[in-house]
Length: 333
Image (cartoon, rainbow, N blue to C red; front, side, top):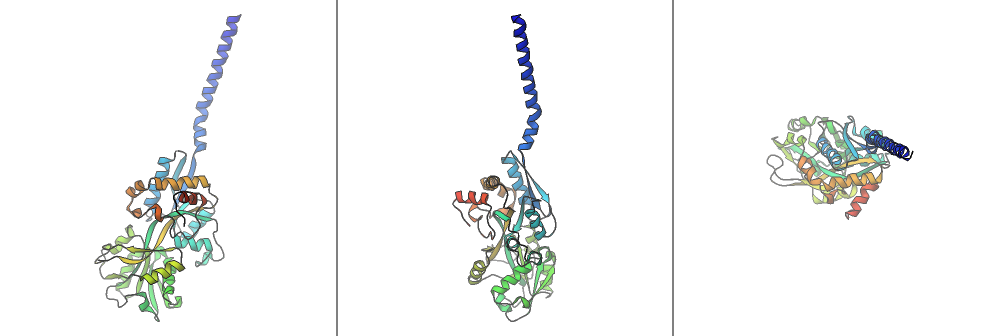
């Protein structure tokens, strides 16, 4: 009898262990899937200047954060609408210009935004520069924007970056030139040089990274001249408008450019929603800078990306998770 009981107990134990083992095997994939956090990083197009940075950052998150699945997601259209998609939770992150983030957050300057501020927008930092380019034809008599005072000015801006019209009027306003005297002409970026040479416009105003493919349009172009800003104007601009930061176009970037061109830059920042989990945003921000050298190796666009400048020119509040990381690094906006 005792042997039968012993065998029965042993058999029962074996069955229980088998059930437990089967349960572990069958539920582990589901549990693992549940633990994964999906992160979407919206991008306008595969050909967008910042797409290479988006791709490498999402790859870095996937590589070093085992519980994260991050993917670039296409979200074409106007940047104002794209930021609305962030606010509404359709995507988690997106690149934008610090100036556009400021307008959107405060509901200013763009007609669709007036009276409709996006107060839930936050940023996790600034990561690359868009240098302001002020271009005239080589034979133009203009050497400084101040030379336009009292005149009607035809300003050409790229149709791909229509918001640059606001940038132009803001800068001319620093010089005391009324926006009523500034006529905006919008053409594709590839046609700007031709517009200047044909005298269809007096000056071009555009903000592009000198490391981007967009700048190649001007690198071999003849018959153009790039204007600098004085230190006085740079100081006035950056003090009045928080989304502009002092910067320069390095010498030899463009044809016959033997000196640095002093001016201002607009920062490329990553935006998200205020209600994103703070610990998650902290970890994502930290991971970017823990592997910043790897990011720089992948794309030249962020050669000037440094932790020390990540809190400059933000213009909207930092997300608390990102702010915590920067505070630990001794940085505040």
